[in-house]
Image (tube, rainbow, N blue to C red):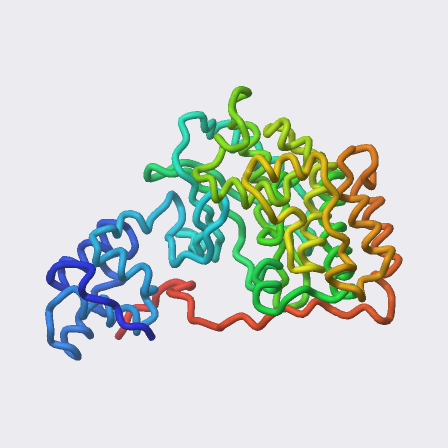
Length: 378
């Protein structure tokens, strides 16, 4: 267990730390009381860093929670009905945290976005209801909540253990053709379910597709594209909708030409294009158009053909390369028309005896703080 650094705060009492956690509604007083008694009996020092370390070792706080509390920021750990446990990723639009529901004690992935004056929470909540009505599907992680709290917007999905395609390629390089087809078929089935209910993703990319420890591909961040498109003014450009130029480039690597022309446009055809870019990355380890600035990338998506996949990965079947290039066609009409067509094309090889389950990289196992109701010490 990594030690909590006492340098994050000037020396304060253990009682101050306890009061901070209670005031931020991280714990109820009765929950902490027996642990405080045990701490004072075992440790002796009555300072905040020592108590923070004790609570981390007891599994009651994560290192992140302890550090934020010592820094006088315990109130930032509570976001609406969620308690933030630790950051698990930094995406194009904000930081993603593992969180725990205050009432149900379940784990969630909560994306925290900068506060935007144009944000319409009422409209966003109506969209959440649309996504909540989707039938359950193993490839779809449902969008469950959106709101504003503590000077930030947040969006929430159930937490899923695994690694994203971006993480897998970074750690292990491009994936073989048969593994890619298996992943693609699973994702296509999820997209088909969404499209049959009038739902598009809008921001599909390698970091939004996760391979669980069971080998199942799952679509993450479903719904964020729709929420953002409803909260973008007509006069805003794609670059104005996100916080930094680096974030913009990350989005542009997988955006359809028509989306770049009209940032509020989120369609099934756009998802097919972004999915094609994602599969290109999965097979080659490269984004389709790696060079240049944001303007260069926009023009490349609209006018250029990416380097042939088999130039980098010669073992990729020709039919798969052709299909991906069709998915990345500049003209929407030239792409596979719908997700069901795409799913059918992939299913032909999906059942091949040579196809194998995706290979999720092993995820480190770590205790998750107080997932269940705390049991007072006796």
